[in-house]
Length: 431
Image (cartoon, rainbow, N blue to C red):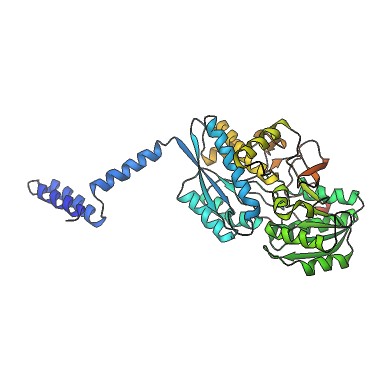
């Protein structure tokens, strides 16, 4: 006999001697058990599970990156850095006396998958925060999920700006902390004719709308503009068109593993940094491991952090990262931002005295951390991060030497309101 029916039949037998009111009570309970297929043992197990969850000594945190597909070349290492921070925090006693329990999901370089996994992390896994995404397409796919379900995302990658959400904290650079200073640097070096090459999605296209407005205002010109699908591997035609355009420099917003064939085919065509430098805003030390350092020597990159950044905090971070993952591994800007994102969230939770989303959001503004790149701070007004601007040059071992720094952290202006030439752009990408 089914256990539910067994318990229901026993209750009915016991009810025969009860007065009418009691009889009705027990008959209703027996009917409930049968219809809902729920035994007393099931109820006990359910209650026990709930009690265990409520008294858990862990805080669940989500990690959502592309661990497969075209973007895994960049995102796997960011996941590793976030796990390193979690391990360090747990070893030091956790957050509010509780250990952090990571729940890891693969966005698989597919934007609908990112949205699906974000929903799972919030609704099913009940994580208190998610650290994740890389491309703006993935971020925009999950943004309505975090807003509708009132989750919390720390996004660790530079992006095109023109966005703000109460449920997202942006710990990578916005455009006035990376791309605009990079173009300023190129113009001051006399490289005024710029070829714009990017992957075909929201970040490169929006970034280049900003760059074109900047060039028009500051005396530069666009030598050409071209976009290729994420994962593109044939750059023969692209390289030929670049050569024919005779630019002074290439501004590269390619993302993911497309950078590998691009730089290799560029070098095969006889183009080096001496003849035509490339300024990249999504290629760092991690990508250099796959591209090959010899294909990048002398080319430029604009970021806020390099593995060679000279701070005590960075020396400790690099040593810890290599000790955990291998001496051949490298650190870079998004890796470092993923790492300190966990610490910024921890500081906000401790300030709030709770990991509750509303309380964290209310307390995160002004939160500071001595990160490997230097002091970082969440802006009180726009959920973005104050960061030092750095420009560097790739060397023969694939690391990057700093050749320019803003020295002090730059306030984030995601809507570019400080630039007269950017009027009219502030609503272009606004969600």
